[in-house]
Image (cartoon, rainbow over all chains, first blue to last red; front, top):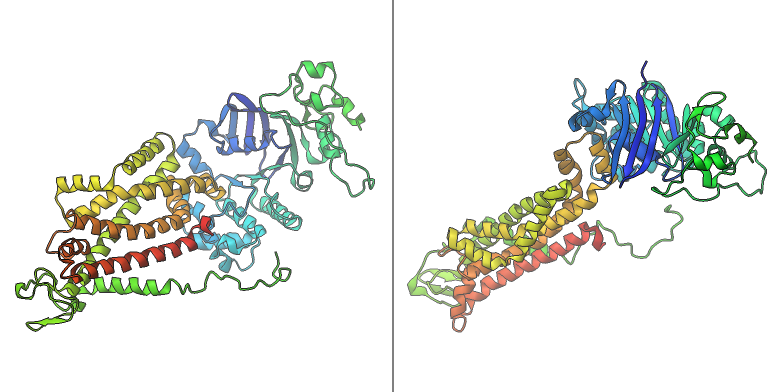
Amino acid sequence: MSPVLHVDDLKVTIGGNPVVDGVSFDVNEGEIVSIVGESGCGKSMTAFAVMDLLPKAARLAGGRIMLGDTDLRALSEAQRRNLRGNHLAMIFQEPVASLNPLMPIGRQIAESLIVHRKTQGRDPRLAAIAMLEEVGIPEPEIRAGQYPFELSGGMCQRAMIAMSLICRPRLLIADEPTTALDVTIQAQILDLMKRLRDETGAAILLITHDMGVVADMADRVAVMYAGRVIEQAPVDDIFARQEHPYTRLLLSTIPRLDGRPKVTLPSIEGMVPDIGQWPVGCRFNPRCPLADQPCIEAQPALAPRRDTGFAACWHSDRVETML
Amino acid sequence: MSAAASPPRPNPVRHSSIPWAVVPFGLILLALVLMAVFAPLIAPVDPSTQNLLARLKAPGTEARGVVYHLGSDELGRDVLSRVIYGARISLLVAFASVILSGIFGSILGMVAAFQRGWVETIIMRLVDIVLSVPAILLAIITVAVLGPSLYNVVIVLALTRWPRYARVAYGQTLSVANMPYVRLAKFMGAGWFRLLWRHVLPNIAGALIVVATLEFGLMVLFEAGLSFLGLGVQPPTASWGAMLSTGRNYVGNAWWIATFPGLALFLLVLSINLIGDHVRDRLDPRSR
């Protein structure tokens, strides 16, 4: 069976400089794939490219984006608009700002049903109320008539999830869905997304920089650095064993409950290189403790890891010996 | 911030409280509007009936069975009745021109901000051009071409005033169009009409209403000015501006002809402007 989303050699440029440089990954039905990386690594641009939401300055320079058997880049604007919100949905970072302050949330949720004319035999208002109940909002009949300012941030995020899922999309892209929420609400929202994934079988692409969210949610992880996927593996495997120094360093920076107390947390030296100033060879080489001559000369390709998945490092066998 | 943690504030300013300072002016405006609507019922006599035997009678004079409460003008017409009927012209012209220019300007401003590119350039440069043409000059040209009439006054005012709304709608739409909820609605497949009508317009309506209320008073003055110059409503229709214009000639020996329409004009514009200021305080987020 073909994956719900198949991205192949995706390239995005801003002003001629690559920001996403040959990214490939698949998301299967009912699977949660997480893209992680620092700010500026191109993870949001990847999501925006898939969602046809690239900012004006950015250009989709190459690659294929397949939704099931449909090549999204071959579609007209009208056809893409019909797909968006219908088969493709997105959850934004800021739940409160993502709802129209002057429209009752029930009507906002029903809107995509109306836009995509999926209202046969269904009252959009009742469908919106049922959806609100499904995302765990108490007293949905009352809430549907309320405005966003009457709801808490967590409830706004639930409402936005209801909005994105009401057309039963095959693919849901969540761009930092819990960053704006406090930790207890975060856990609730993540549980909700997992439950809805189980119920609807939607594929979820989760963009985040929060390894805790990844560990909790993802089935598979793709780590991005400077516009490329540098390691990709099932979540348990990648937490157990890293074959790229960046992944290993990234995981080592997370404080652990069972770690030694009062020890300075490790950090990754240096800065993410600016767009257009990516180093020759492996792009991580200026910050990498393992870097040597081959790393400066040539860029490693993604190669199979020892267990499952892929990593792009000349010294993948030595990564475990770091730190 | 929880309610328990914050110290009790002295004299909290509540937005729902009744603005007592504005209420009297609201009542004046209401009275003037009612006066205009029910003019035939209120006016003691027909505003156009002349009586050359009762010219320039002082307020309170009775002549041939008619009491001239506010005096009579140079043709023996009742000033009170003419002031009452004049409110109709003022309010009608102001209302019609505000609606016309408001709708026209808002649509153009929103489209310019939403489409960007050459559409934006054409519309906003047109705004600059219209704003740089003196309104009175345009009025004289229009009247010269079309002839003076009530409708032409409305057309002139709409043609000269729409750029105000276009500029405000343009600026507001630019900021609202970048809000996540508009991007989300766009992403979810909403077409441009739905986006503008359902998502952008309600969120910029406050600013447009503020402009419209402040413009309303200006339109009343504009109409009076055009009629004063003889470019507006033509006699014998009663218009405050035209009454001021003729009354000016008699101000030495019959002060009431110009004074009462002037007073009515003053009260109408004052109350509209004060109410407009209040509306702006309530609706415009920048003035909070």
